[in-house]
Image (cartoon, rainbow, N blue to C red; front, top):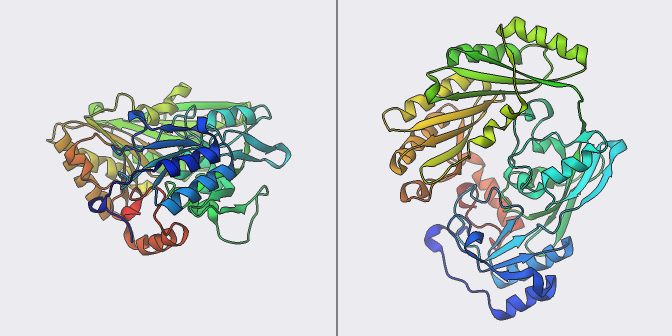
Length: 432
């Protein structure tokens, strides 16, 4: 049975257990947790930095047997995502597992440890003209394991798919100390339990990712970002659908809008091709949207900029809707924020995934998020809170919203892989 906030209990890590942990990883890699190690207001007691997969498994086994709750951590860039942990006595750091293990460039695959940052991985692959086709947030800090656990991806998923399409293998350390592997170096795998897809987006509640295998794509030497605008959201929706229904081979497509823009919207379209191909694609775009401008590459950081200066008066949420409902969703945002002194700005991907920032008083933020979530779920969409102020009103909101009819199956899977509720208790959907 899952623990809830009401069932929180104090648990002190004994000197004996601390000694066992020091024996596993070395005394220099165990330290007392400080205020900067807190996760959503929950203060851990120890930070243990493991150096290899065997150490990860041994630390988990020790914690599991002692009843210690474990919060896995990579770069720490997304620790505020999800609900507040019910408990969290131990931070398990994977920052030392930071190697690119095997880049099979001829096969367009790579295996990498979970603590490797995306920036280091991409720099390594770029030496061979290849890339992991992923534009996650904060690549200089985000680690492979953290990105997989949060299922973070950006506008490139339009062309290359999401993480579940790019990952082809994974090794997980389970709470009982088992190292479980699924998939591998080849692109096609058909046997067994699909651990890569289960672990992706599970927020570290099923097992700790120690390494991952990915399919790769070549780096395109010629690219161009074009930008165009629309007087209102409905006009932009028409342009979105026209481009998506065309034969244009665009790589990424985002739409930016804000309350201060007075109902207008701006879009960026990333084109990658040969020089002749770029000329031909620009001609196609002009036929569909009219005039456009050549934009700077930094426009693709618009999603990341939503976090800039986010503090006690801001909330950032992820919305998922049908691509044909983007304009309607933006109108819902306008309606949910009207009259509550809330400022808003949003970045939508043409796939229907949008990121919204709201600024205003804590009570108005909570009310606005509730209204918007209710409207989106009524249309078959969802709203997940990624950043929230530490206020009573916002803390009372569940990060995930309605879990749907998949929750019993998710609970059964959690109980199968983590029956002691050792990993990230309470952080995931439905209090898992």
